[in-house]
Length: 216
Picture 1 (cartoon, one colour):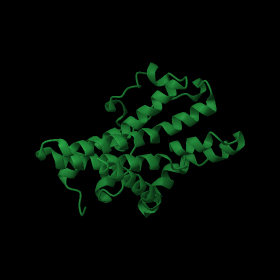
Picture 2: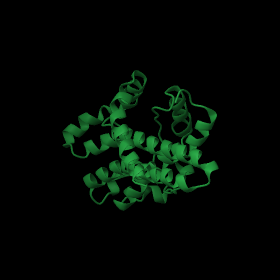
Picture 3: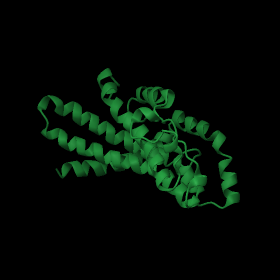
Picture 4: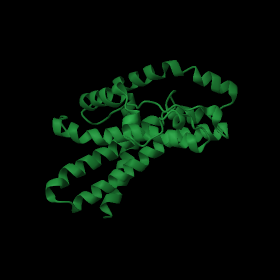
């Protein structure tokens, strides 16, 4: 893809929106499963993507990185679900499950978009190409967000997952990185390091989904 045109951006809206917001919703539902009903009592627990839209993280940043990086890489975030770990029936287990909920949700959505690509073969010819392109974007975006969220850099879910295994002292030292985490990620994006790290994993998932598509 040499450039990101308007048609591409329009088709990318739904995959981006769902990839960012539903993964955040998954954290809220997992927190409820683990005993914390904070999001539910605040009216923030929903599968409605509008509940999680952050103007900067869900719209501006994804669009900017999508255009600047020509669709090869993209980042973004949603409005975080309010979670109080003190309500978890098992603190360490709850923190691990909530942390892993986001990337797992992205993997499931990646599979869902793969099914969309498969189904696109049997829709009217006029809709086949846009439906297939949207499905491929959904696959790629969710693979990106899955591995992006697994980065062990606070405040990413991957960092929370790692932190749940640390001793109290080590955890305290690890969390000191959090004020700098966003800047570290920004540097990694601008320098191309983040794309270099994540590309092999994203390509692996895309290859696996391509094999699945070929089976049908």
